[in-house]
Length: 332
Picture 1 (cartoon, rainbow, N blue to C red):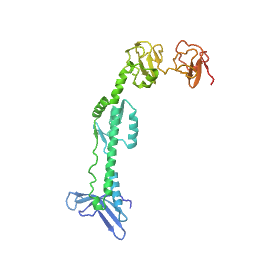
Picture 2 (cartoon, helix red, strand yellow):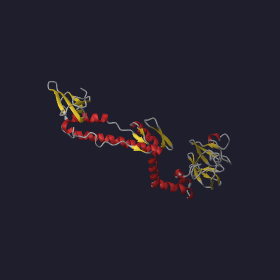
Picture 3 (cartoon, helix red, strand yellow):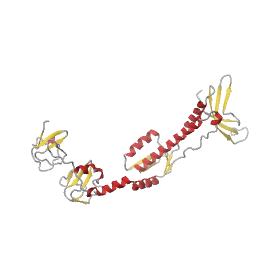
Picture 4 (tube, rainbow, N blue to C red):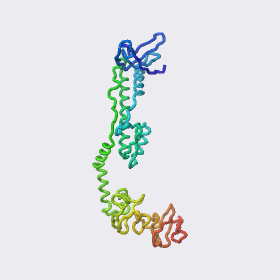
């Protein structure tokens, strides 16, 4: 016998545990009794219950395991309703989505079970997945609670007194508009975000060394974005992010989209920690820097000595400037 569970229409007074044949021990465990309504003699008359068989008299633990195992098997979380559409992802997919959405910005798409695609901000989608996870955990916790309650009973009759439906978490209904509003309110009142906004607004008004500025690089405005918009006039010394580097305005001018920082070294320069340019403190080379005679530089792990002023920024790796007589490799 494999403890297969079947639903049975029986008569009132059927016992919760019954030995069906004393010669060859077969025990029937029954639970979930409910009264049927219908005419006498019809299948709807009497009671209905779930039943499984044991080839021996089951222990209390075996009976509790059979009932709780059945309950877990028939309990499926309801899909989360997102703007009225049913959405559900399995645990592995939820974990992958949560990791992905934590590092994602912009619009993403949630696929509903009714075929609808819901386009939402990544932060809203992350909240949906987290609500889904909380609901799934709630279902699992509820099932464990019912299992523990069943295990605390000693007889099949006592186990039939356990309400197998009460306390189950209800289906979750979400509105993306409401979530977006709540997230915006959280951001507006978050001390860390407020402090970051203040720092962003003032970072170019504070005198910072190159080393200090590089440590605070994420606070500086990005090229072409708020604080460093195209067409805005910016004074010499104004700093901004471009790519992975921090740049500084050399000559006061208006930022223009076609004047890319890497292409106009007469207007912008890369902010870097000041090095003495000695053999013990060489200058890390970056393209479009100017070479100074007598200074030492490092590029791609190689130490070079400048033997001739370039007089202008050079867009080359130092290894390509050896033949031009600008640098020479220093043997170490």
